[in-house]
Image 1 (spheres, one colour):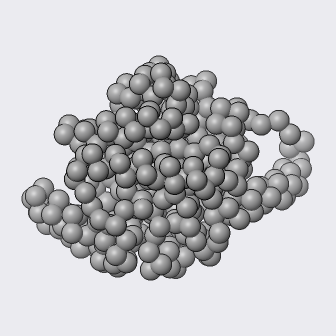
Image 2 (cartoon, rainbow, N blue to C red):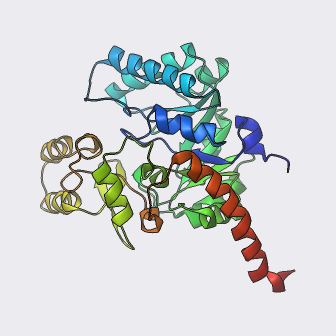
Image 3 (cartoon, rainbow, N blue to C red):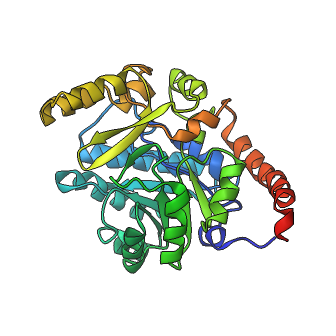
Length: 333
C-alpha cells in the first residue's frame, strides 16, 4: 500500500509520532520507535541526571543524545524545541543551533510562535512540525512555512493552551483549515484511537502517555506503575498561568489545587512546582507527591511493553480493528 503524505514527508513506515516528554523520551525510546517505523522524538531533558540552568551545557547534552540516537538507529527521528518566552528563549536558541549543526532530520516545535525558528530550521534542511491548539494557530503556522502541524486535544497530557477543544472537535477543524499534513494527539493509546484520528482528518497520530509506559522510557518504574494503575478519570487539569497541564491525579495535584484555590501568591506556586516537578517524579521516583504529566489515555494502558513491539503491534491491530469497523458500518455501504 502506498504511504500517506505524512509518511512520505518524514520517510517513515507508520504515521505514528512518539510525542516528546520531558525527562522521559531519551535516546533508547526514540531509537526504538524510529527503528520500528514510527518517528521517535527526543525530549528536552530526557537522559539527564540533574537540572541545569547552563545554556551551553543544555545544548551539549542535546548534542550528545542526538549522536547516541544515531549510534542506535539510522532511521529518521525528531528533536523537540520548546520555544519559550522572554529569557527562556536562550535555551531554545541553543538547541536550534545544535539541531542545525547536527543535521537533525525533523524538529517538533512547541510552546511559541512558528515565526521564531521555522525559517532557520527549514533553511538547514530540517522538516518542521509545529504544535498548535486551534485551527487559527494552524493557519498561522502554515503561513509561517511549517511542513506539518500537530494539534493536541484537551485530553492530552502535559502543557497545553487554555482552550478546551477536545481531540474529536479540534482535529477536523484543523484538517479543514490547512492543506498540509495534520498530526493529532490527546487520549490516543491504542489502534481504535489511531483509526478515529485518521477518520477525523488527521494524517498521523501523536502519542505520549502510551510510550511513557514502555520499557525504554526514562520514566521511573513507580511512574510507569502509576500510569498502568490509572483507571477512568485518573487525570486532572491544573492551571499554570498562561497554560494548563494535565497530570495524573495524586497528592501533588490535590495540594497544588488547594494552594491555587487559597489564593497563594505566584511566587509560592512557582516554588511549590519547583520542588514537586517532573524531575522529582520521573527521575527520583516521587510518584505521589510530584507532578506526572499524563493524558487521559492512561485509563486504557494495562502493560509496559517494548516500545518497538508496541509500534508493530499497533500497526497490526489497526488492520484487525478496521475490519471490525467495516462490519459495524455494513449498512452504510
